[in-house]
Image (cartoon, rainbow, N blue to C red):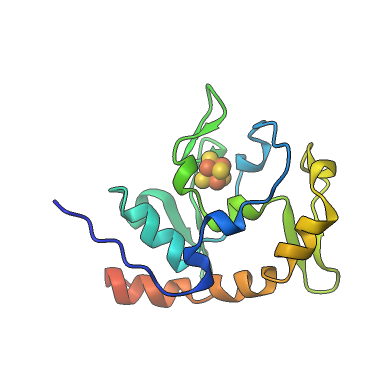
Length: 152
Ligand code: SF4
């Protein structure tokens, strides 16, 4: 079957732009018990690989998030600690360890062992998109309903 991927025409179609430049050690810590928000663009890209939405995503009543299996993201290979969809991983995974707090605004999460390899220029470049990212994640449920036709 030919899979047709829809580009949604938002800034979040540009996955490469949202990669934080840093010296990631690929420890996989950020993939344990993940609560990563999924955007419509992520759902579209990952379903284009042949996965069904419920295979990799759960809805918490407001936000679609990555699914965990045995305490880690469904896409993490626990033997190698590598992401099995690395080239297609969600925007939020690319942005981490940049995170957002309503009071503090964008900041670098020090729980990431390589947090200090993220330059201030990366926080400046991408931090301004984090509020937009969170707002976009609140539109995912509507997209799932329209595109995949299921309700909760
Ligand atoms: S999609 Fe990949 S990078 Fe993102 S949490 Fe899952 S395993 Fe980690």
